Length: 102
Image (cartoon, rainbow, N blue to C red; front, side, top):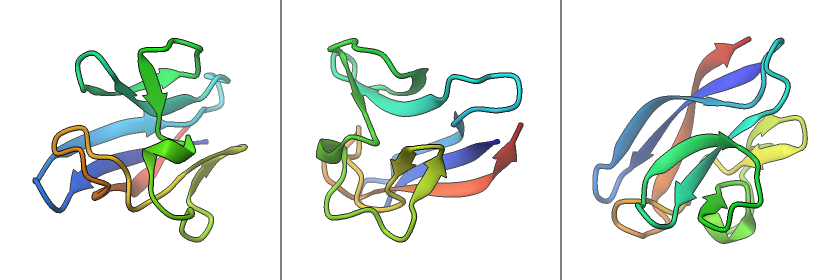
């Protein structure tokens, strides 16, 4: 089961809604939020070795340790707080769990 997440930065007001993190019953390969280095765009893509992508489950994309259990899909965990904002470049973006999909 996957998770619908919204991203919000309390500092600059950046907002992106309705992202589909994880994998569902039919879609086995999880989609993971990532930052495109060349455009600064927040996208959800399957994990790849593309050097243009920084995935938000990687330690350099959030500060501190993952709060609680984070937002999980199998062995991939997102930190709900202190994520790198694609707009202002600060670690002030939150991922908010808003529901599940399958």
